[in-house]
View 1 (spheres, rainbow, N blue to C red):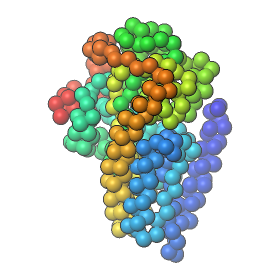
View 2 (cartoon, one colour):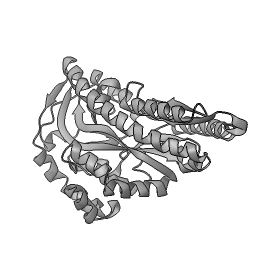
View 3 (cartoon, helix red, strand yellow):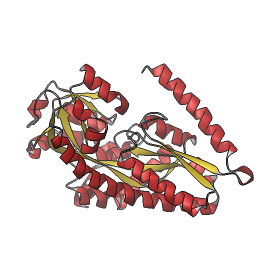
View 4 (cartoon, helix red, strand yellow):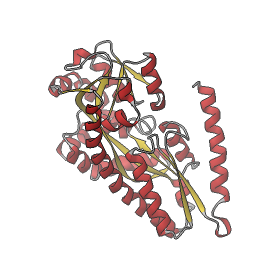
Length: 331
């Protein structure tokens, strides 16, 4: 899709969204809250928003109607984040590698390669002082309220050409990455040709040979059917993808006080539901991918870590300094 049709679609959506929120909530009418994410209806993001909808509608006794738009129906992650900032979309799931990276340099802290040891370490950081500090930066840059952090999987590199067992195996492979500058630098440092593109364009790009592979979690490999156009998956575990559940501050402040509290409650409930769904579905997705014939390979992560030391040095100041990086490592 060219830039102009995408822009036109986005501007049409802006008008519709603005009209809806402005006209709802008057004279006792139901307030319609629109939320968006880039996953399929089978993705844990949908589970998170289903729980958000359930709790919010229940606590407001029908005064709120939550409408969920999956599959990037309202635009890419970046476009959805911009709509939230402008107050034209109520909420979106903004990942540190996609919907946040272009707007909030501090959120790139979570994108540093191999910065998290395991899932428990990841959650401790997100739910602790570092996560709070990054949330404040997100709120300031995107004029939003961060309702909590979702989890969007442990990312591995995969391609259709050959097994990647060491960094040198990435040489000359065109790997699609999210729009995060740190992620781009990481894969270039590893020897790949890092290629940013919208998530919704990746399947066709793989079919046409525009890229050789990508880097996602197991759930995206399965539900987005990337397994049909790739073969080799390497357990690089280079990134635990953080997702901020962001709610428009402009819309939040126009809600009655009790509804604002219900939004906060619904956000907390969604975090628990989404994380549990991601964890459970990741395990089942891996078994299904193996059944479908994908080949999985262990790698020596130390070889990959050595190659990306420059990424830390080059980006420390942008993410808040070496001090906050050490806070993450020691959390």
